Length: 267
Ligand SMILES: Cc1cc2nc3c(=O)[nH]c(=O)nc-3n(C[C@H](O)[C@H](O)[C@H](O)COP(=O)(O)O)c2cc1C
Image 1 (cartoon, protein in one colour):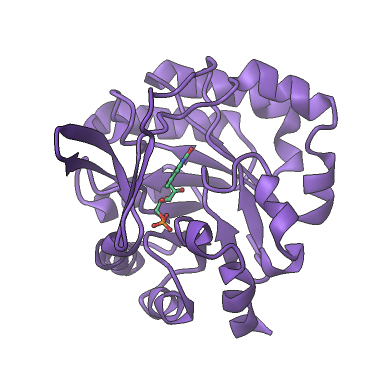
Image 2 (tube, rainbow, N blue to C red):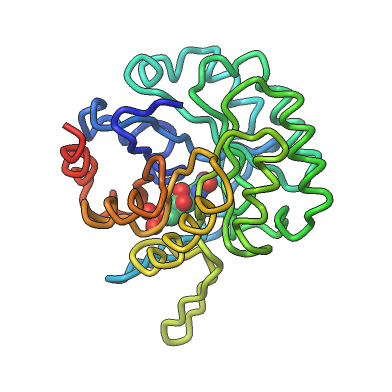
């Protein structure tokens, strides 16, 4: 996959294309949509976002319209302007292994419109963790590869075995890339309030750097680095340890224009 510049908008933070209104599309190599699941999900009750200087905790819980409605929107030209302006990555997940296959099957007729499909195996805000069952995960990787004829990316985190083992498994099953990492399960305690969610932002950077470094040593996969990339220096560090592209997420909340700044590294 060729991304120019090698900068991706992280799944979830840019919603379903809304962020494009704020910046020059030329600064983005690809735009990842929010994860779509088989059934619609209302997500978790508030509070859903806790922001501090060094981290953000979110407990959005994969709120989305579900694949049936998403396809209606696709056919209804809701995303046509987005497709005209940027490469788009479709992100999907399931509440169990079978639902991953069901989403993939429904999306087969539309796969050519996307630069890649990113399979979210690592959402910390749902009860199902596909990475904790390597046997079933392997079956799923093979089944999804069989059904889809698109650039396939596994989004994996650090909860459920060493990332390099999971990434190698994905490569052996014919997958093209990995996004490393996702948010990690975390807790915010504020007086009497206890908020569970996934942590993102600067605290993730050293963990994501290690993940990219280890996966680059073991595989020749396309690696999209995700986790705490806030500025040009962070971006450079990820490329140095083997990233093929970088993903910008939490940084967009602090400064929507950061993508344009980082993109200047490539012009
Ligand atoms: C509010 C919010 C929503 C997110 N939603 C998704 C999602 O739907 N699918 C997904 O794969 N990752 C999701 N993520 C994870 C991001 O895509 C990204 O991998 C993570 O935040 C780490 O990168 P960052 O530190 O640059 O934000 C979400 C993150 C945040 C903060």
